[in-house]
Image (cartoon, rainbow, N blue to C red; front, side, top):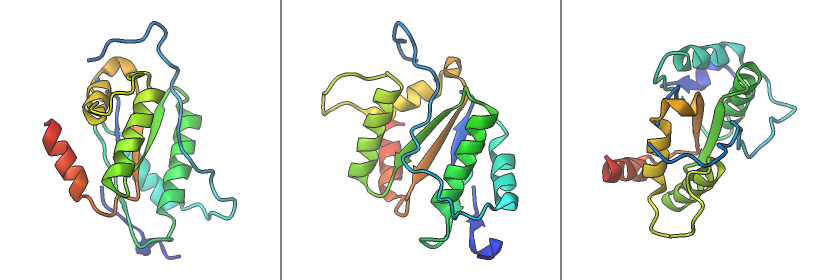
Length: 162
């Protein structure tokens, strides 16, 4: 597949978060739900462009292209390389195909980070995560929003929490 068929636009990263900390904070980990396909053809030029975009404070990148061109595999590959280079980096994979899946993933991430252990269905997981991300004591992190084909619910969710 030619490199120009995957357009790099602008994954979200930051070295940044106001929550009470658990007694023993969890160690940075990754919740990438898939393994890298052994048939995946590495795209060094694209990976380098992603790395360049995300190496600056508050860096962001979006992988945009038709379904099946390898965006998810490229994100998995980048996340794996990042964790190898910086093992103390959190990799937070959030499914964003629809509002329900997004909310479920936010809840899963909140549990992974140990910023929420309850079961209240009214919990604003997005706000909890935003606060955690703002706390620089939480260290480096990478967020991958996978399958965010329809951003309208993401914009609505962000507007609700400021």
